[in-house]
Structures are given as C-alpha cells and as structure tokens.
Image (cartoon, rainbow, N blue to C red; front, side, top):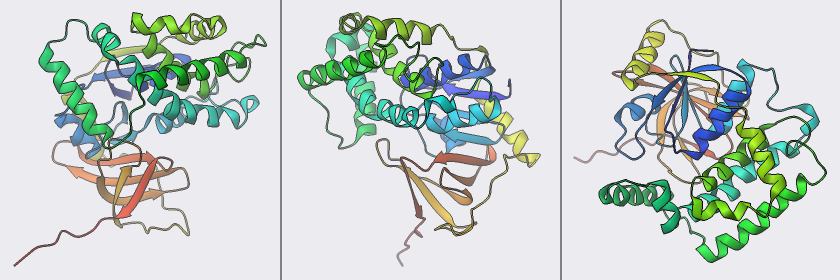
Length: 317
C-alpha cells in the first residue's frame, strides 16, 4: 500500500489516530509533513481550502477527515477488520463521541499554559503566538470549556472508559481492536505528551494498560516524501485519468456536474468548491483543478459536512 500518502505532522492528535490504524493494518505508506499553522500552499493545492490535519492522498484522490480516511484504509486492507461485526454499532457511536466531545475536552485542557509549555518546549514565543492565533481562527466562535470544568468532565469520561474495561476485555468493544479504540487513543496520547496532565490518567489502571496495547500496534512502515513530490504524484495520476470510481446516487438532492461547496460544520469551516462527481449517504466527492496538482477528486464524509450549491459571484457595473 506504498501508494498511500499521509499528509500530517508529528504532534497532531487526529494524525496519531490514523497512524495507529496504519500500524494495526501493518501497511506501508508515504509520509508528507505539513505545516502546523497557515499558510499551507501545498496543502491548499491538493485540498482546495480544507486546512485540517491530516488528509490522505492516493494518486489524484484526496481524502479529508479521519473518519473517512479510516473507512478507505479498511476497504483497501480489510484484514484485520477495523469495524469488526462483534463490536456492532457501539463502536461507531463511541468513535464519534471520542472524535468530538472527548477530543474537545482533552486537547484544550492539555494545552493549558503548563501543558502547552511542555508540549512546545523550546518553541520561540513568536511561534506560540502564531499557533494560538491560528487555532483561534479555526475554532471560530466555539465556546471553550474552562479548565475547571474540563478537569471535572475528563474525570467522568475517563471513569466511563475505565468501567468499559473492568471486565478484563483487551479493547473497548471486545477482544479485538476497532475504530473506537483509535478514536479514543488519540486524546489519551495527547494528554500523555504533557507531564503535568498525564498524571490524571494514573487513577485508571485498566485504561492505561489498554492504551499501551493500542500504542504497541505502531505506525506501520513509512518513508518520507516531499510535498512537491506529492503534488507531482497527483498531477501524474490526473493526466492518466486515474481516479477512484465514484457516482452520484439516484434520487440525491444534488445533480452530478453541479458546482457546489463542501464545508465542515464543527470547526475550521473553510468551504471547498468544485464540481460534484460523487454523492452517497456516506461520502461526497468534488472535482477541482489546480495548476500544480491537476484535476483532483476531493472526498469528504457526509457526517460533519454541509453541501451547498455554489452561489455565483456578483459583479457590479
């Protein structure tokens, strides 16, 4: 699976989620390190404006959002299954809760001043200022939980997870790993990066042992790739007319060929514009053209994203 390219950076929680899934699947992949903050010109050339990290590339197909990326990885390498039947629907519910509620409690709490100083040890003050401004722009008007409230909420959340493991199961939904394990693991991983926060995990020995089992799955086998080379891969696949097969399902609310925008509904709400080429209950795909990347298909999940018909730009005379 060495044609799979992950665009990420080392300290990104959602990147760690995907890296662990790649390790679970024992896959080989290529690693492109993206900037932590804007500007991201090579990212935008591929995604059309989606700025969140990570995203995944296979030729001229660009996959946004870790939930969709994990589904694609599982289709490409179905064994061992990422969504085992024995885990049922609970794995999806737990994963979505972890990707949203748990993430937005654990990560901002970890980035309180003491934790941020440990995670970004050695970073110059100007970077810290730029990082704070960048993340403030991404979160928009999102209400941030206070440190006091976040600590109390984390205590409840960690206790819930500990209770799930109290019967001796190896993983959250049973004997085998599933998508829920990787979604929860990213927040635990981030908390462990700050010594002043990692101690909050100590009262939950089953959870700590569980995390070590997940982390032991590793990140698979990977080699570095420059962003320029990734753009060249997309351009070459575009010229060869190689894209994953997609279609607009019958009875969809939007017609194939319609110019649309796709926008995240939770944070970093930057619309991506393109021509609709794929639509189902699970996925939306738009085609866009970039002078460096060529004609790329950008894929998004339906959950967490909004599709709108692109409005014409008004011109005044």
